[in-house]
Image (tube, rainbow, N blue to C red; front, side):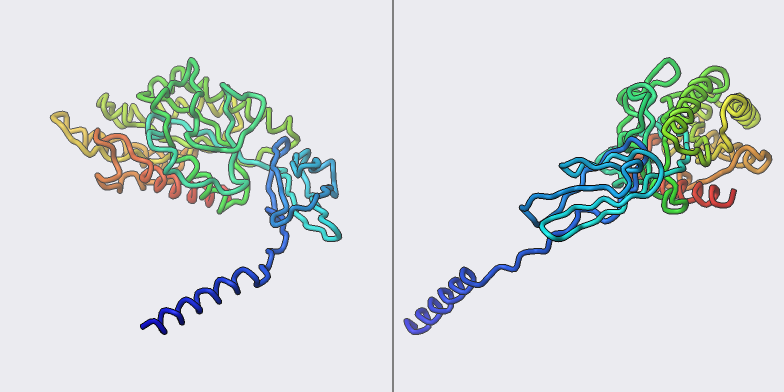
Length: 350
């Protein structure tokens, strides 16, 4: 027994000695990113990993993208530039594409479009896929899209307050970008508890104001506007109000006609509202179906409207909050992905 113990101790001692004396192979230095997609004015800080040596940074085209001594890249104007990091006698490179064209998409509707989910459960944004135009808090710049999308953008036309917790927009933009490879400028324009009458009468003005401001800023940054869409998810309030199908359609047509008259919007892309999962004495299930069918009919009869997702109508009770009306983040992710993919395909074909 003692011999076995001594043998084990010897083996462990030998292993420890070898681990301490064997040379450790250091990882090779490398650039933190080999490719970057930015829009004019956007910044991104690069670094060279696995080195403690000093780094000398340079840009092949400073009029496209410049870099400072700490690796901070600033996109200047559309084009392509190579950022080089020199460490000792070796060079490491990152190709920066400063985008020339962006698509502008306004996300409008009521609470489920506003986003009553959970930002922590939203997907990670694909690099370069999308930016937010926060008209209320950051009117003179575009910021990288993040959840909760639209938070803090309340004004006289739109109110979301604490309802804005996590939306379908990041999932939508990821799927759209995968189809088009064109970055999206996402414009928040939703209002909790809003009916189509208010959109026809007044809220359309808020959409017009924010959309035109976004277009103006894109041009100011020397980019081109590609497609311009209004993505719409609303109708729950109309169902509660027992609105007729014809009135719902008339309100949407009137709203869109007013927006189209004063903006370069091309199409209204509709995401169908979900089912009501807790029917009561007023038989809300049938009323929600009435609105869903009205939107389908509108998209079939009008060239201005296209139905891009009915995924919400297929969600089970597990994807709803306790009130049977508001959709949790996992459901919003599913809807956003479905709608974004369809919108991207529509953009490619038009």
